[in-house]
Structure formats: C-alpha cells, structure tokens
Amino acid sequence: MECSVGYDSAMNQTIIVTGANRGLGLELTRQLSRTGHEVIATVRKVDEADHLADLAHEIHELEVTRPESVAAFAASIKGRPIDVLINNAALGGVLEQHDLEKMLDYFNVNALGPLRLVRAVLPNLRAGQRKLIVNISSKMGSIEANQSGGSYGYRASKAALNMITKNLALELEGDGFTSVVIHPGWVKTDMGGPNAQITVEESVASVLGVIGQLSEKDNGSFLDLDGTMLPW
Image (tube, rainbow, N blue to C red; front, side):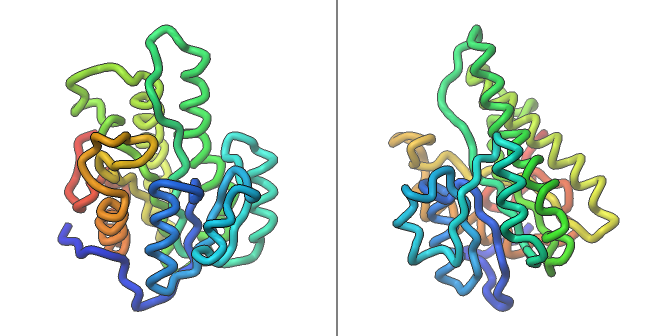
C-alpha cells in the first residue's frame, strides 16, 4: 500500500478513539481534530481529561473491561452514524511467566475490550460512511516474528486481538466493512519507554496516513505503520 502522511480531510468524518487520555490516543485525537474530523474521545476517568476539552468534539467515560460501561457508552451515542472506530486503549508492561492471573487482565483489555466495543457500536458503524474498524495491535502479537519470547500477556493478548480482527473481517465483509490491525511502531510513550524509536507525533501521522487510504481491499490485513503487510 502506498500511503501519505496524515489523514485525508476531504470528507469530515465522525471517529471514535478509545484510550484518548494520553499517548497514541491523545495524539490521534489531536491530529484528527486538527484536520476537521469530529472525534468522540473515550477515557477511563472524565475528571482527568480536561486537556482533551479543546481537542475532542465529545469526551465520554468508558472502561472497556466492564460490559455495563460499554453499554452505557453505546446508549449515549445511540442512533448516531460513526464512520471509524479506532480501538487504541491497551494494557502494556512486563508480565512474568508465572503471573497467570495478571495475564487475564491483558486479555480483558487488549482483546476482549475491542470486541465488546465493536459489538456495542456496530449499529452506529453500519450507519456510517466508511464502516471502518481499526484495532491498534503490535508486531509483538505476531507469532511468526517472535524471535525473543517474553512479554507473555502482551504478546498473547495482541495475537488474540489479531485473530478477533480477522474474524470480524470475514463476518462483516458482506456488509461493506473494512477491519484491520495496525502496528504503530515502537513509540516513545509511557508504554513504549524513552528508548523507543519514534515519537508519538511521527507514529500517529504515519498511522493516519494508512487509515486515510484504507478500502475494502485491505479488509483483514495486519499492517505496519507505513502500510506494509506484517506476518501473522
């Protein structure tokens, strides 16, 4: 895929961005709003999101691990067409091999959370123009590319997200949907750490360049931040 930097603003769109309080989510909200799109930003705690007031069209409280929170969010936007859903909220960090209880938290946030939200807002997406589902994944979720091991919870939960996205791609393609997973690079955020390779601004500009050019032919793809295909 040939991609440009930034998101095509020829048609203003309504876009949900989860995990918008900081890092990639905050920068996604900033860059999308700057180019004229209507961003519905979700955060875990609205009272800690004052910095989003001038960026997002709306700010909603959402905890993707709690079905009742997802249902409440869906009810608050009932009947509104949504063009793009960007599932960005995630749990990172190092998980030791033996900490199996903590591993459940990774799956609940990184894999089941996006699936809960897709199911809840599917009527909104059906009413939108683009019918686009973007799940922010990671190369660390690639089974083929795993050469170092470790990070059990993060790797396994992102691999699960990749499979969930592939299922969505197959199940919704007949309705004109495009469902993809995108690796945003190793980014200098709280999760990525100071030794990461690129800034959050660079990552988001590249990711939005990819998102802006996605079409139905990309359905079911696992993409790098430059638009190239990644191994499952």
